[in-house]
Length: 367
Image (cartoon, rainbow, N blue to C red; front, side, top):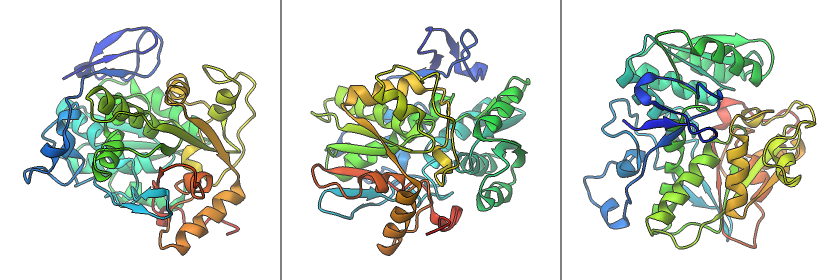
């Protein structure tokens, strides 16, 4: 296996240690791993599986036992310049399956007594489902206000559910407090970099489906930034392998009511601001993260790509959900934020992810 490396203080640790964060600064891990190039010609071979594992040369784990066929979601053109990727057509109905399958496969190989995770709903559902597939005991911490359908889905997969009073940060704090108990594997989609190496397959699929090219802009919703950072990983790997000549701009989207990264970006800061406005309720619960642990990495990735941050209002989220539904796509309220921001673009080619199914949250109130 590869080893963990702290991007801030360069501390390292073997993956087998199951250390969930840097012991020196308590920050998230990166992974010492170099992806091998994956050419279009090799992907056309009939022996390739029709899932994200077709890019096995670029993944830090191979030969999975827990796959549910995740990945290879449809790419649909909705306007002359904007495509949408239907990542809600995953086994657990959200893009989080891309990273969850790698975490569950890693946990299966490390054989802990139990797996824990924290989530606003979708990541917890995905971890619960893949742990069920792997035969692992799993506990998921979620805020008590998590959508009822997501709570039901987590329980249906057999995971133990901990409803935590307070917001998303409170749920994360409760999980981290339990993460150091011996025999525990913390399947954190934020702290564990294996998750990012799963989400990067989103961009590999775009590149393959667009014939070895990428759009001018890749638009992603950002809370903890796992899809954006995975996208940045893939873009870097494709460019380093000579498989793309130009890097697309990363356009990060946040809800206006919870937008600490957008505020920091537009202030020219390298990290979150100290005087950021307190979060307010938002329909986009999946990206309502007031203090993302990988903030510095997210801000740097967007700047280096030549991208920017956009914010959307609650009314824009409601309108975007109805607009997509009128085109045949029922997407959860978090998942429509990017369409609200970029669905009307005509000045450049772009791809927007539709990250979660509408059945997870229902129609946004007031729509």
